[in-house]
Image 1 (cartoon, helix red, strand yellow):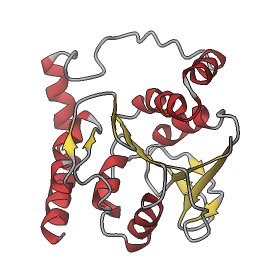
Image 2 (cartoon, helix red, strand yellow; image 1 turned 180 degrees about the vertical axis):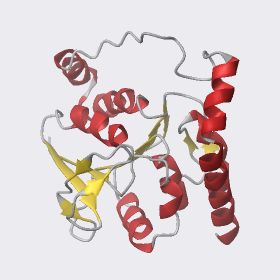
Image 3 (cartoon, one colour; image 1 turned 30 degrees about the horizontal axis):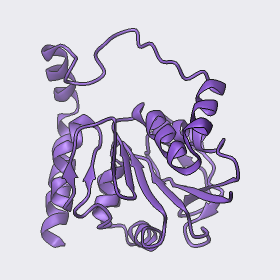
Image 4 (tube, one colour; image 1 turned 90 degrees about the horizontal axis):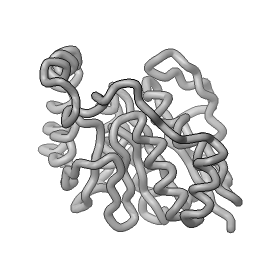
Length: 225
């Protein structure tokens, strides 16, 4: 089995949205991995980690699996002609169009989630509808050939779901065992549905400016579209 899997990366992305799924998907037998960006210059993540692309958007081969990670400034790319054009071209023929966290909002801006159920980070769920997506709670949400993962750490669960789809459950389980993916979180509070209300309020307040900016950008894009 030969599979071409590619990640779009861009400045200020959240590196775990990329590196978590990459670590899993790179172990799929026959997978050819590509990390695509505008140029081959290092791309700096929101935490300062620099990532080296392997191919430019212009030279990226046609992908079987397109993966878009998220980040705190995804709204910077809603109207970027090069990135949106790349996603539309790849999304038209890719077998699977996928994202992690707020990467789904960039897919939405490219028109690739119109009429599809999708998820994203819990704090960005209300940004999906302006792009025509159907906001759906879930750590991993699949609708036809669209597979979207929730916030940041959900990218690993997302990746195992994609592996099971591509190569079968036994391969996914073997990779899971090899990576010792057996999570036992220290605290039960990684989602508003289980976190203390005062903690949800505090974290939401910390992100207020970012959330407001992103909400406005989604609404502007929806009106313009």
